[in-house]
Image (cartoon, rainbow over all chains, first blue to last red):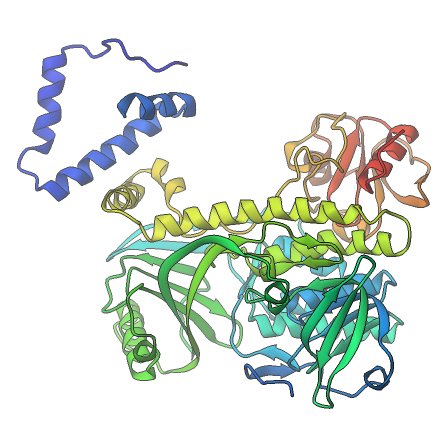
Length: 60
Length: 542
């Protein structure tokens, strides 16, 4: 499996809105915690270590 | 004079003057410096093989305090081979269940769920002084049966000089100094190894800036026999983490992680310790049970190892060679694996059956084991004591998720419990022609399995063994003056077949004296076995 870096999310504006809404009204600390949980949930979903490693690189 | 550095729990080898103290230096094949668990176990191993071992210790027995309390199955299996495990398992507390808490809430619990069909439990908790005492008991028994083991208490090593063929050791005693010569000197003298210092050798690694308070508490409490671990405990002044774990004799080990910037003297004040313990105990039951403080101590730790475990005629084993954080019980357990690896090699070299270079493989194999332990315990430490704001955010995210979702539980790290390393691709190991189960591949330590009468590991013993499963019994194979004894099991039981054969109708294993698998084949081939055996003692096939 390779990391997808081409557009892959349907309704990008809608997704982005949802992401921001999840953080609405949260303190900085709570937002940071939410982000961390989200990253862990997504990483587990992906699972493949080579993809995760490529994602870590791509995000730098 | 020999300074007293600590009190002892048990007097095991009282000082007695020996004639050698007033004679010219006597040469010994093996001198072991340090009568702790590692040095004693090595002496027992060598002595049972008929190779003389002299242990020097500057005290007369096991030091005060429970210290290493968790002994893993691999250690117990080695102790079974040495005839010392029964007393340990009888006295020790067997535990399987662990609970992990974060603040007020329980995150999850785990069960080590030991696999059936092993002689020894996955873990026991036992105070280190008992562990040492039971090894000395086994040494006394072996001595009575003729094993050439000697322990000299209050014999403090004050200097060594190294030569190509031996080491000369300066020893101080209550009756004054004398000299001993050793073909091989094994330094089992602990994390602060005076021998290492005398030789000016470095001990580099990573220092963790943290202090842990140990309180051993004697109480009659009906807490279950489980390992309880708190991240960010809710009780007052408990620090960043806390641990509650049961030992024999109604003793409970309590650990508090206090952080770096503390006043050591103040934290060791019994009233202050009692306040912490009261808060922890009452958080569970609402009341404070009656208890006594049995032993308290504050420790810091480092993860580090010597670059080389062998320096000519001097070899280092146990904490003198490597040090880890306590999370995962990888200190004493890895030291016992060191001498398990070293004992048979020293024995063969001293009997002239292997070249001195075989001892180099002790250093490389066990350095690999030490690296694996350091990696595991460093990772546990990083999880338990996050070093940055973001690592703490992720750590707490893992704990939050672990309470709700199974996927996050394997990420929770309060110590990965000690398991032996597998010497994959190390030069003394041979082929995997069987392509059998991964757990018993070449390099792995043999896993136990039930036989019709007893257990596999008891039958393997401490010599080269040819284990044949199914088929007909092979002939014993000899090479380089060594003969592998044959253990043939015509109709293996289901556990044995599952762990050693997989789907193969039969299997042949060559197993070395420390019960690690050398090589394995789908059928007996005398020449392949002889070649593997030559290779296993460092005499590569021609």
